[in-house]
Length: 608
Image (cartoon, rainbow, N blue to C red; front, side, top):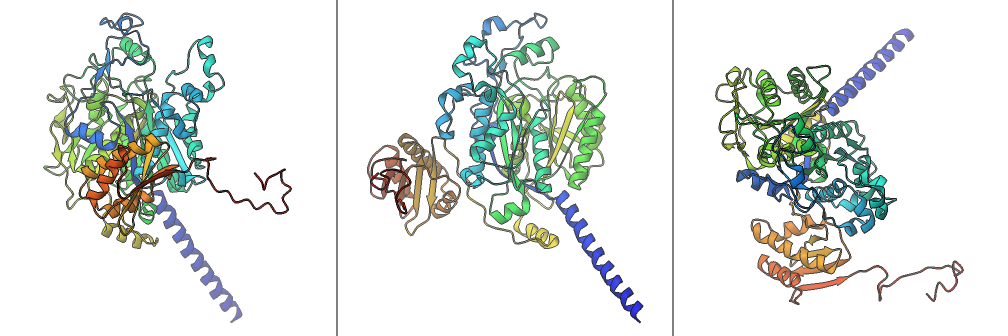
């Protein structure tokens, strides 16, 4: 009998351990495939695009952002340009996609001295600005993240900024090392915001931004961080890229990417910056952050020993697509559209299209082709930021329920066998409304280094879908209200809006001018969105904007009185319901309470 009792106890213990092991395995598997929510985005792209909304406007209108060489880079354009592709040291193109005001930066906002700012690569400056804006669009006060396990994954490579003769660099000596180092690009964001999660600068050439997002998703799933910024940046500081690709004869003459088109004649080079704020979907719902889209899966791989170091490899592209689908636990038929790499080279486009036809183009239902497009046709090839541009475009397409058309694709490339599968170019906009099927897209980026990346995005789940997911996983509660998105100002100032019986909108800035400027922008924002309830806007902005030293209170009983108060504040006029002031450190009249004990810490401390 004693042995039977021992045996029974042993069986109970083994059974309990097996159940625990199964639960642990299920949890590991769940975390491995846990959807990652995109909760915010920030960007700078050619064509005067400074916000995701402005990028969508460019895409929806079929805008072409390509222009001539900028005049703020110190390039000798007359000496640089030569239509002969074999002439050494010259470029046969004098067009590209460039950022306006790329050299401008509000150093004081980030506590950086003018001297140090001058030594900083403009890529670092841009990413600081875009990081702040992306977080605010997520409903997160950037200053609230200090000390948090937030990660930064930034795709970038050396721009050549600061490489001047020694006598020309003496003005900024001591800051050039950190100003030029690409590792500092991600580190400076973490330093400025006090983030302590994994911080990495990724360089896989043109696939850098998408690889950065892949690494961010992995880090979130393993618990290394709870929130992450992921994306990429490129600023064309020197004309080296144009000169090098002139010798390769792989560059578009007029700077335009004619992706998958018969007229494709090479890549058109561009610059840009884009960051996405991502976190685990369960956390995003719990925290009340807006879920713009969901990363279902991703994968990266390498061409290996193929037909050339810089040549794309079709089988490798097929493998990375299938790996991303496996990671997302989906099939090729589940994907509606691919935002392609679309380099517009006569070698690269046919190889990429064939890989898509061989994967997504097979075994598709009748009437449901894979749609194919590329944002490069609008803004050019933004290099290390290209993947971020494709991701942001795809998220915007989901939000606006439209697949934008690809420019310059009136005649598809004859070098691609379009009859080999159901793949069609987006020669016109295609409606993409929600329906019975979950809307999903693939985004591709391929680096000249041979590193390939593919990401699967899908529309955010509805409240019912999320409840089902939570119940299946045994996690906590979800379905919190989304924060209202407020377009951020230009780093001189930020709005804070809080609710009261009358509805109170608080405005704050780093300076008096910034306060007035923010009031004007907030007025424009409110007028452009009459559907928003003043109290909802007030609540949302109260929890996501930083409270700076120059502040004003605008109160009113309705939208009209609030907007009128903002107009008065913006123009420096007094008005009922508007109060302003400042809290300047060390200013006259500030009360300080000192508890000195017996008073001997320093001479005269009580009197002072």
